[in-house]
Length: 272
Ligand code: PAF
Image (cartoon, rainbow, N blue to C red; front, side, top):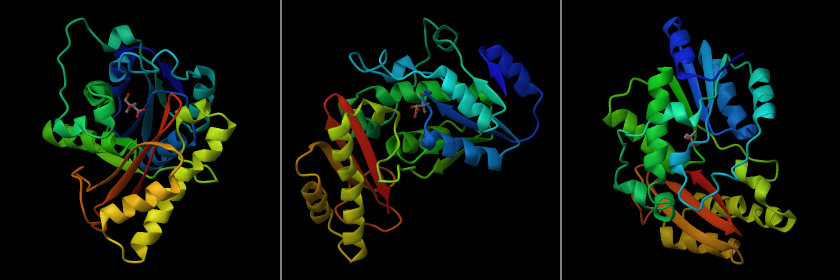
């Protein structure tokens, strides 16, 4: 595995590659969720590139940019073990200039995650667009856990005619059901136990739907009941374009939840 710290190094290498390139963008602190993306990319491409870049423009003032977990050495080992060809770790100063051409996410970026984090998705799209430009990847791998991010990136690629296939990847969970996240390490023991209610509430909703329930209100009530003592930020039922829906449409529904544990926000979702 080669570690590349500059954009020029990666661009020069990219010019010599004519076969398929799989790209997994990350902010580091790699866990099994990232590993599953990398493994899928490894199987489906000749060459794979992973980037680690804690992107400042997607953090709002007062968010955890400085405290965001950084584990460079273990991340490098993980990438090595996953047979990554190129690990790209650029500096902030090379990724951003003083006068940026700004990317503006569409209105649907201001609901749900974008409601509590206005502008967050502008920063995500900005950096992802740059990374797509640098890597010129054939396939880009993104987790369904960040469903709204995945939807906006898919739309950006379509709207801006970017020649890359976006590959959605399944959510990876701990054995007890907790969705993997770099932020899980912030949970204390009690919170870690309580966090199990997120996936349990989604499974309970799915069971209700399997029995024939379609009404979004009824399903939200069930989720609320399962998570009744938690600090729920939102429960949303949307179609794949992120329009709120009153009735479940099988194969076109995502149920999303966000719960706060102190300063830590945990997201989970299920695709039906
Ligand atoms: O999902 C993430 O880790 C980030 O939002 C991404 C896509 C790497 C952009 O910084």
